[in-house]
Image (tube, rainbow, N blue to C red; front, side, top):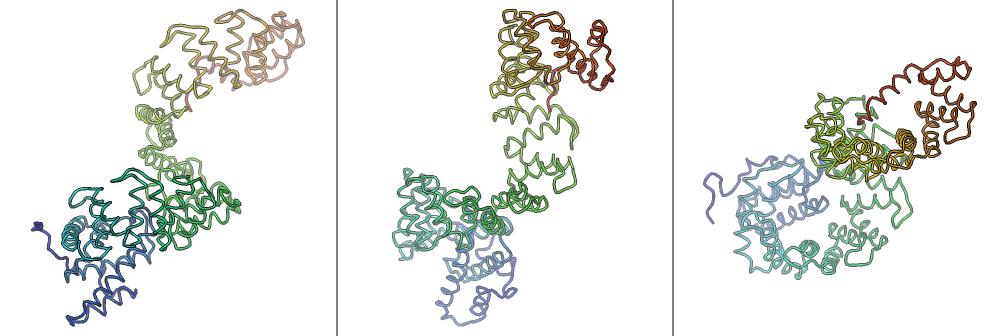
Length: 572
């Protein structure tokens, strides 16, 4: 294989971020002792140093997430990984071939660890060539590394068939990491037909050797009932095995089972304890769950400060639900000073990750100009994103923007379409507005029976506007057979909720004996209620009945009533 001319075949120790002797770890001390010797007969010592560095590397990455690097390492872990990097680098300088592959992985880095892509690619090429040249050695670690190189595909292109072959060869020789990798291939159906029973078989072999990710994987399979009957007890057993050895995923999963009371008595304190262990290792999902427990008051007492602290930790790692939760905290001023700009900032981050409630929230921020400049086009864009994911409130608001032509070209057909989607999800205001569009023939053929259908849907959910409107439809015989009793019934429902026009119309029906027994006392009672909200017609009717109204009219209520009669409900 031709080497790149702009990158040396061996990276010298001067290029390594952390130098030998800066820390007192076991790997660092062993490396210093061996590297300081000039004795050419130290091959066994080089093997020992490699083993020490490789075991440290394998253990730390095994405790992280599925990639081994999707986690924020603790300071101690980082120190040990940098020790291993130093050891592998100096071993590579001495052309110790087995060091090439872990060195390429370390240079690929991850959160809280430096990334050197050119070095990573260079060492991956050296590792691939060296493993191919030494494939006939009776060394399962070489076979496993070769399988991983084929799986990653950075040198020869991804080849799951070859990865499976080399993993199986190493796994059958008893290498725990290869057994786990082979199980993952069967679990995911990579290079082989997906087979949960085979996956479980290989995971079990690795787990019995203490491989914590295999233990976690077995817990997942028992939890989900994959390849076996669902068994929370067995899931707990394997999660605990991994968790007690420090595996962050297993700690998070065990915490979740304690929180939900799955396979065990519900225990929020134990749940938070395991979440905290995983959160302390930088696992974003555990940080989010711990924050949610503090925020909801599931622990001894609600603690917004702690909630904000852990939400922030997770949000900074890109956890969308944590970003949205932070947006909510800033919007409401929970544990932080209310700050709509910060709320919009975090909503937008989560929205870009397809978090549906965040998409709705940032749409509402743009619609109202909260924390951002008011921008109906942006509001429509984000409402559209959320609406396409089935968010009913976003569907309603998007329909409203199309109806009014705000941020989009006015389009009643689009308004009907989005109102319909929201209405089918029992969104009351969408049902009401859809009824009005059918009633007025906007975007659809004018259809009073359809209007009544949607008004009835909203009215049955208790919406007083729809109840009042149904009263009008029954009173006028629009879309239904004219029926004063039904009209009075719906006016009564709306009137009891404080709808002024319904109160006036109900009073009028009692006064005239339409749909109800004539009753001036009832008429006066409802006129008075309407009059107190500023309905001047009600006051005139009271005078006609010879009833004085000494109650002061609520002018603000009258203004709100007028506003309602002029326009329908605007989006929140």
